Length: 115
Image 1 (cartoon, helix red, strand yellow):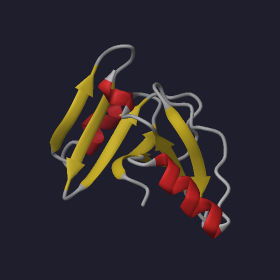
Image 2 (cartoon, one colour):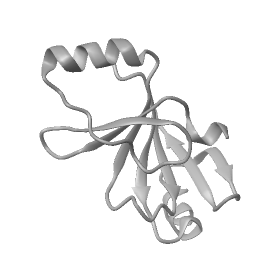
Image 3 (cartoon, helix red, strand yellow):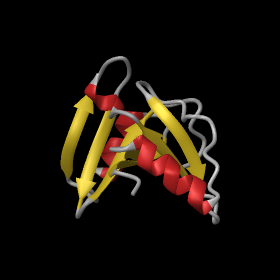
């Protein structure tokens, strides 16, 4: 219903140091960019870790690309889920929801790595 899970974004102070730590544990480099700041996506067994310095990101964030925003909004309306403001990510963020245990889920119109 949410669409494609793009990554578990982790807040890091130094993306290169974080990538060096995570690389042996998530050995497949799924994506890497140097501009506008270093970013890495490391993958293992279907889990993708997103590493990049994002000052507004203070805790882990699940990031999804929404395929059908109208259907998702209709489902939220039926379920009584009220999306909050979009996450502070580059590109087109749609909204953020918080699960009952406190996990934030960013819902994007497009993958911000596609820029």
